[in-house]
Image 1: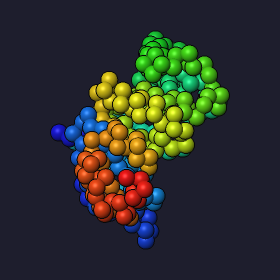
Image 2 (image 1 turned 60 degrees about the vertical axis):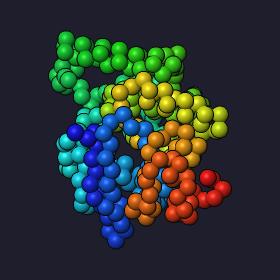
Image 3 (image 1 turned 180 degrees about the horizontal axis):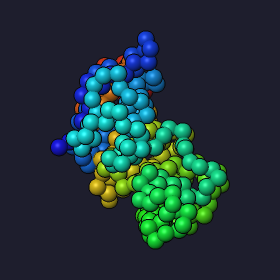
Image 4 (image 1 turned 90 degrees about the vertical axis):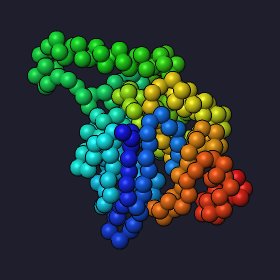
Amino acid sequence: MALLEINDLTQRFGGLLAVNEFSVRLEGRELCALIGPNGAGKTTVFNLVSGFYQPTSGSIKIAGKDTRGLKPHQVTSLGVARTFQNIRLWNDMTVLDNIKVSQHYRLGYSLMDSLLRTRRYTDREADIDHTAMELLDFMGMRELADEFPPNLPYGVQRKVEIARALSIKPKLLLLDEPAAGLPSTDVVELIKLIEWIHKELDLAIWMIEHQMTVVMSLCNWIKVIDFGSTIAEGTPEDIRNNPVVIRAYLGDENI
């Protein structure tokens, strides 16, 4: 059974065709990319997969379950986590609390439990604390647990956002422009981080990325879309040498 299976996915916004009969299949453990020009429909695909939009037509299945009609938190419960191009951290919460909050989609206790501080509540909260601190250790950020995001460099904020996504222990991690806004030194560190996460954890990573250094360094399979339609797919070498891709997106100077 495929981890993710998308068939003939189409999304219209009024008269705008944002995604046109898009299909992809991920078996699990892949590290792959979805690329294309600005406005090609890449983030729309991720929004459809994660439940923020409902498709006009076509289907999305995660581990065999059709996600039509599911809300984002229900898609998350199937093992899908994501980051966003513009970092979305809670600035008035500590790094630790930012990571903890993502786990509350599956509380495991009721409002009454929380009001009465029952054993179920305290056990679940202790488990959430443990998972969050364990993840900070894994990411080398334990010393930042009590810091607030605005006090951190942009590259570290990106790392916190990735850690928050990982806290739900996903089977599929969607990274939307993880290198956006990063200086070159941080991009090098990001490449190492993603490579390490993929090696150490049992998950597939699917990314949108404009920086071809990141894509070509990390991904073993790349899908290219333009105006919502697939124009090419293949290995980095296939994409690098594809004249359709060069004309539509990469440009000779970026190859």
